[in-house]
Image (tube, rainbow, N blue to C red; front, side, top):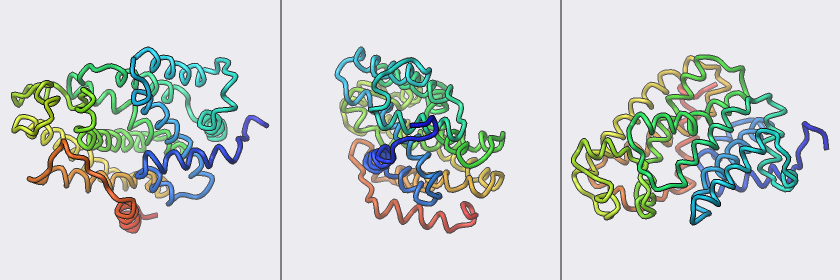
Length: 287
């Protein structure tokens, strides 16, 4: 197998993984041509493998070892199992074929070490740094598959990642709390008289609601900026940002008076497809 080839079954594996665990991003790739779609799915599958490590281990050390495997793989260290790992093979194929920088992927792995411990996210600034290295990086790396990097695209990718990441913190709040994890910045909780113990008790309080509302406001600000920047990037790049249509809908839902952040909020795949399809037909995302 040449350096620019990868098994086709690896592509199918990545597609199945993303469809199962990150349907919003999976659905957004349906609006892209085949070769570009394959590359996006490899990037998103890699993100799933890394971001789910903390769910698959009961202690930090095994998680650190799994993350180190990805760090070594990206650095080119010898791993006999790379060929047997379809996500790793697909990611390397994508990096080589599209000449993607490796350091953002390595930084994403490093940032997810935070997930292995039960330390609360300390501040809004810390959360923004975490999301810059994770959600924003996914947008920026994906855009490099279809267009030359530019300051305008990177600016858009940053705000898009912050909006999407903050919305995900809100959507995952109840699940994370049940695991005694807190990605909602502790700083925001304390500003409104709340505490992590209050969160882990699993009941909505005015303090918790006020902190979540403030984070939703921050996300809305980044989302508004991102939508304003869409017109400044090439039309072929815009479909990559279709998940923002889903973010907009989820943030609107989180601001409803009857919203309970501790209750699971499943979204049907049909509804997600409909949201993205409608957005793809608008001037914001139009080609």
